[in-house]
Amino acid sequence: MLVESLSAQTSDTLIKKINANRTWVESATKKAIPISSIKSDDFSDLMFLKEYISDKKIVFLGESLHGVNDFNVLKYRLIRFLHQEMNFNIIAFESGVHECSLTNLVKDSLNSHEIVAQSLKVIWWVNSNCEMMRYIKSNSMDIAGIDPNNVTFPLKINHYLNIFKGEKELAKKMYLLDSLDSKYKIRRTKYYYEKGEDIETATSLDSIRKKLLPQYISLKNEIIENKNINHQYKLVLKEAIDSKLNELSCSNSSKKDVESFFVTYEKRDSLMAENLEFLIDSLYPNQKIIVWAHNAHISKKGQDIVMNKGVSIGMYLKNRLKKESYVIAIDGWGGNYSLGLKKKQFHKPKRKSLEAVLYNVPYRTFFLPVVFDTKKKEDDWLTKPIIENFNSYKNNVIKDKYDAIFFTKKTIESKLINYYKTPLNCD
Image 1 (cartoon, rainbow, N blue to C red):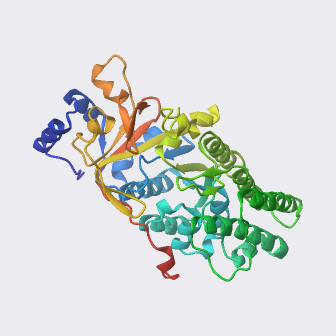
Image 2: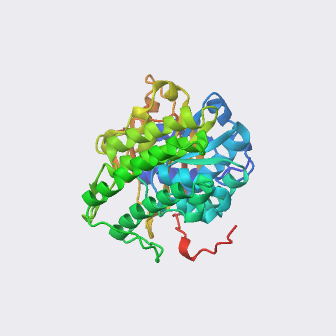
Image 3: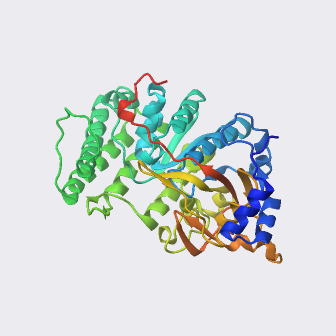
């Protein structure tokens, strides 16, 4: 197997440079399983994962930082492996329940770029995720969202008509409500909106809430009582509208003091756990599910109180589902990352951080099961803080938070696609 490795001399130089404990590096190297590629279709180097995941129904794939394209590429490869080798057919994203649900129902009529733009948050609008959506579509896999916050613009009216299959009035009602909600958000945050729609807007959170809440509730009741909509679609549409209701019930001010509807921290992670449980127990009871989200959200026990207010999906998930889950953090250091459209360079890892240890393991990309022996001092590195989004807190450690970690070096930043300049026949 061809493995990208660092020379002994280079490794020694790095160890001295970032002052990592050599014993810890040796311990981590012994545990590490090298990965030959982050994008290959040859899965021979990933077959060992079956030993860890064979009895699991849910696999969480995290990321320490949004804006690292290598994480997107690696996740796409892991998704292909889990689908082809272990029969995982559903992917739940840290993206809006409403937008992912509706997009999934009509994805066969969308191209891959449209699926990405209609379902995922802008931070994941990259070419590799367009390739992933093409794969998902061609292999009849499903996508879903678990985030109560919905941020994309609505589908076109013909897509709503397709979803409701002949129930034109219901389709028009939902389209107009989603358009009004979206136009309000877009007007407040200066996002793009297709011109020509004669839709009323509101001037305050209270006024839009009073207008939308009762109409969404009325629409949900009409959908539930309608005998022409099949049971599966009713479940999806009800959950999508409930997500809107949860969002409309919360308000938040951004750093620019622009008020918006946004569910945060404890409420957000608890709702993401509930939404995931709905997918597992009600919508896809006999399916295996992959969850795509930030490391902080998938952590089994939450992070340091400063990081995401100390909460995570794992804290709220039912115990029986925790037993059926395998939680994989994804981290990396060296190279570049992006903040929005700005390219940034990783700085030197902090002394005695987890990244300082793992950066000296002599493999470009590797897998590390989190196995901790309290009797072995050489395993003390598993108690060292993770530099999550460049914030290192003493309680933010990998031990007891994740089952394993993928680590990669010399990363490339995410390059966001301009959806509005992408040709519609891109597939």
